[in-house]
Image (cartoon, rainbow over all chains, first blue to last red; front, top):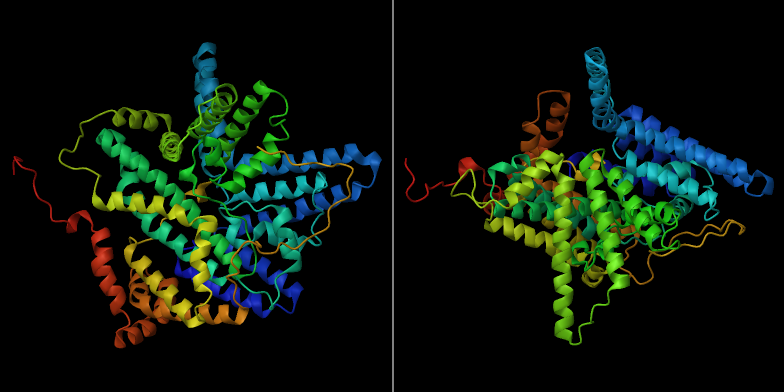
Length: 499
Length: 117
C-alpha cells in the first residue's frame, strides 16, 4: 500500500478513528495498532508479516533475557553470546534476503570462473551447470519490503538493552508496535527504541493535543514533493537518460543528474514527511530525517542533514564501536571508510552501491585530513564569508551529484556510459534538449522545498494555529486537489522501497 | 562525530515519555478539533476529486476490485458532477496539469530549420 493512494487514505481514516476510539482501552488499542500495521504490511505479503511478527517476538525475548542477566556479574559472557547470536540472526536474515544474489552472482561465480578455466573444460562445464541451477533459485528470493529498516530498528533495541542504555519494553506488543508501526515500517525514518518504545507504552490519551497543522503541512508537502516534483523529474528527465545515456549529450546528462539529485531528495524526504505527519495525527513523535541537505557546505555537514536517522544509527552502532576518532588518525580514516562501505552496501546489493559508499568514505577521510592539517584563512568580511559558504554549497552539491551517478547507475557499464556522455557535446537526437522551462522550474522548486525542512516551517505553522477546523480542512483539500491535478497519472513507488 | 557515554555499571535508565519539542511553537489542537478538520478535509477532498477517482477506477482491470470501487465511486461522482464540484479539478487539469504533463503525441512538434521532410 503506497502513501499517495486512495487505499492508504481510506486505511488511515479507519486507523485514526479506531486508534482514538479505543483511547480508554490501552490493551485493545495496542492490539488494534499492531493489527493495523500487520494488515498494512500483509497486503504485500502475509508471509513476511508473520516473519516481522516472529522477529519482534525473538528480539524482545532476547532483550528480556539480556536484561535479566544484567544483574548477575557472572553472566557477562552469556550476555555477550546472546547479543552476538541475536545480532547475527538479524543480520543473517537480512543477508539471506538481500545479499544472496549479489554474493553468488557478482562475487562467487566471477571468482570461480578463472579458477574453473585453469582446471580444464570439465570443470568449466560443471560450473556452467551449477550456474544454470543456481540462478533460477536466486530469482525466487523476494526481498521483503523495508527489511533493512526494521532490522536496524530491532538491532538498536537489542544493543541498547545490552549496553544498559534502555530497559526492555514492558510487553512484546509494545515492542512489536515499535518495530511494525506502519508509518515508518517500509522506508523509515529508523526510529530508535529509546524514542518510540516509551511512546508505545504510555500511548497518547484523548486529552493529548495534536500537532495537527504541522501534520497536515508535512503530509501535503510530502505529496507535493512526491507526486509533482519527484514523479515528473523521474519520468521526463532522469529515467530516460539513465536508461540510455549514450543517446544524450553532456548538458542533457548534466540536467538528468541534477534532476535525479532533486528527485531522490523529494522522493525520500516526502516519505519521511508523510510518515512523520501520519504518526503525529496518531499522537506519536518521530525525529526529523532531513534538514536541507543540499545547503551543506562540507560532506560531513551533508551527512548531518541527509537521512539523519541512518547516519546517526551508523555513527552510534558502527563507527563508535569500531573506535570512532579515539584511536588516532589512520584508524579514524579506516573507520570512516568501513562505516560508509557498509552504509553503501546497506542501500543495495550491487558494486555501484559499494563504490558509492567508498566514494563518500574516502571523501570524508580526505575532508577530515584537510581540516586537521591545512589551515584555510578565514574570510574576514561578511561578503567574503557568504561567498565562501555558497562556494562550499555549490561544490558539495556537485560532489553529491557525482556520487548519485554511482547510486543510480545500476551497473558499472551504465556509469561508464554516463561519464562518457557527460563530456560529449553532440547528441544522437539533434535539435532536442531536456533543458526545458518545466524541468528547470521543478528542479529549482525541489531545491527550494528544503527551506521548509525542520524548524523553518514553524513560523508559517504558527499562523495555522489560529485557523478554525473547517478552514484547515478546506485549505488542505484545496491544496491536495492542486497537487493531484499537477501530478502525472499513476503512482510510482518510492525509491527507498527497494532498500 | 560525537561519542555517546556507555556506562556498563550504571542501572538501566527509567522510561520517560517523549514530549513534543519544547521549542516548537505549540501549533497543537485538541483531538476534537483535529478530528473535525480531518473529516472536513476528507469529505472536501473526495468531493473535489471524485470525477478523477471514478475515472481511475474505470481504467482498472476488470474484476471484483474494480466493480467494488465503481459501486462506491459512481454515486459520489454523479452527485459531485450534478453540483459541479468537479469543475475546479477539471480546470486545474486543463491548465496547470495539462501544461506540465503533456505527452509527446499532444505536443505541437515543429521541424528544426533545414530539416528534410
